[in-house]
Length: 326
Ligand code: ASP
Image (cartoon, rainbow, N blue to C red; front, side, top):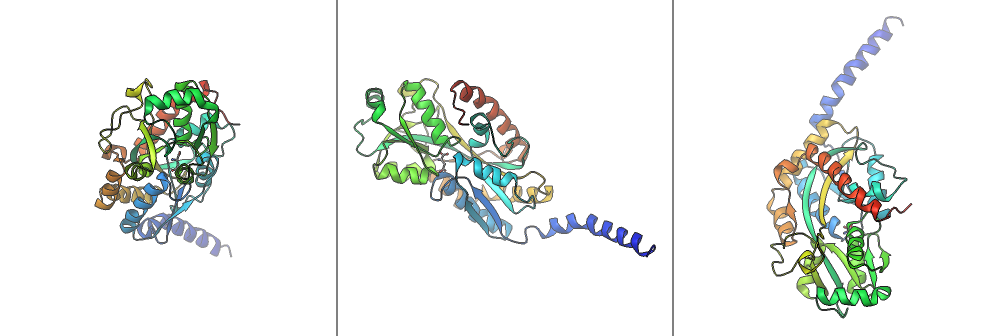
């Protein structure tokens, strides 16, 4: 007995020391879940599924995209923050990772502590749309119409923490109006409501809106970036149409729960870098107006720094707006 115990202890120490290496070599040995904080069919979902197909080729395992919606993306962020840090659960998120702390006082995650960062993915412009039969034909008319009819206008969004909400709030603030807000579980369903003319206005990423703009299914009033975008060269920015300083650009990053083995994060990151160069991903993103981030931004360090800088940028703006939701 006295002899066996130290042996068992020594053996388990050896097993423990060997375990991480064995894990790194085998990783990934089963399907990986990629959590999307918004509804299927929407713009974040499109990026996730297109990327997931390429990641899966690279990693040799299926990437199962799972939509966990609610509370402007914060439920999904909390889910991943508290998931098993074993390298099999990841989150793709956008600016909401950095705006949530100013909007919610009872978050179940900390954007600066709860994650192992993987890297940034794409930047996506937004577009301001109206339903097809909304009277204003252009932005100048929209501004006039919005000021005269604000109490009749319904603005769809994906809840506080969503970029559609951020964009819509900045728009109302710029115009000095208050619309009625209708939140959805993502802008996939919000777009369906706009197409069905159940809501009047939606601000959404080009990764969803370009095909609808091209088909003439919606009124299109402008892009939310500071510069015009190459995919829609004739579309003026909101800034050049009178909304001085107006800018919302969506960025997407990938996160794992804090404590995920560094070897897994690094393997996932190298698959990400390869996926971001694949013709299937770059082609589809180009068609949808999204821009793959430069290589120096495809890193954990860059994403970590970016989240911090975006928190510093948006917190004072959102607090000044009194946009805290609880
Ligand atoms: N575009 C959405 C947002 O407003 C989210 C989505 O459905 O992708 O945050």
